[in-house]
Image (tube, rainbow, N blue to C red; front, side):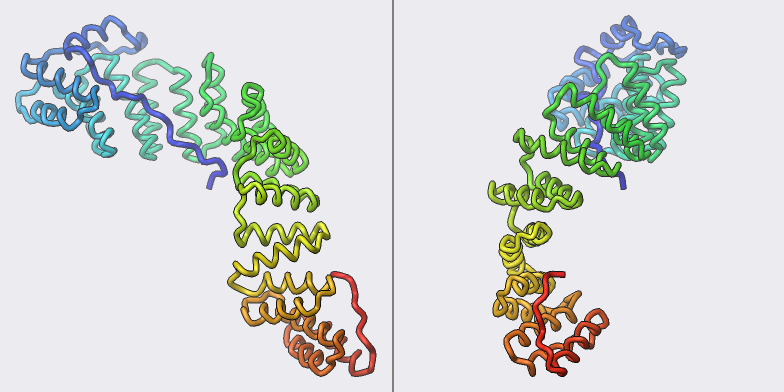
Length: 426
């Protein structure tokens, strides 16, 4: 799965329709000639007066967003067995627009294809529909079809615009052809005086997937030079740094963003917290997470309370860790957090509370360190002078491979009359 999820590309707001009468629009298109390199000869546009009246009215209705009123007129025209090729193609392109508006994507594509197959529309409309078909196919994830359509479009029009290259790069990216996507998008950006932000996003994402992190970072930095407070770009840059094992740089980017008030989501605070933790900066991690919680941005759920307990423990802030683990315990479904809580309480010499937490951990079950929990319970009983209870707990601990040696050593020591000495945290 790609790390960067790109939004669906935006299509033209209107599928190629005419606001004037159908024949007048056809004549106007002949004069403009958007595709001067095309070898296709403009077909003669002919339409009966009834077809022209109905389809021109349908066009106006479609442009006004009144698809339900336009549809009967379009269907009426298409049901006419004597309809000419131009009128049918014109009606099919209107039908494609209506179907697309209704999110009937397959029907829209079929109507669009039919309008092209009839080969009766003026060059401008004919080739615009072909390009639009490629866009429809991308939107509906028919990427191989879109490639074929674009190849035909390029061959028949003799054109290669920046937009066209960008659409091709988009398709390559979605087909996981990342090198082709990067190369094509670079050409698109170079060919346009004002490249769209989405083009840079696809270029950056393609480079990211190719593990070309330095190049990907360069693309993002160029965008940030134009908009230095774009949090989306800042987060992307941080992610690139993380994947390139450049944790200090990632922290610098996000911590600066936080100080400038740009970080305002729970996800952002948690990402920065984890970056600090991975960089062995637990104090900064704890401070960041506490700030997010205090501001009400980060919810105090099980995951965040556990994370706070973990980073506070690493920072040797036992009071913070105990408080966080205590909150997480109330939200937990197994005994693992209670074990962590009991462990911290034990080494904070709060034995009575530690015993309660450890017994709760065992009762809840699902413990990864059940043997160690029995060892600690035995230690608590031993320090309280209750050797019988201590021995009983340690013998249970002997049943777990990870705790067997520790338990056996304690049993041997106590049975030899040696009093246990409290040690530091392990």
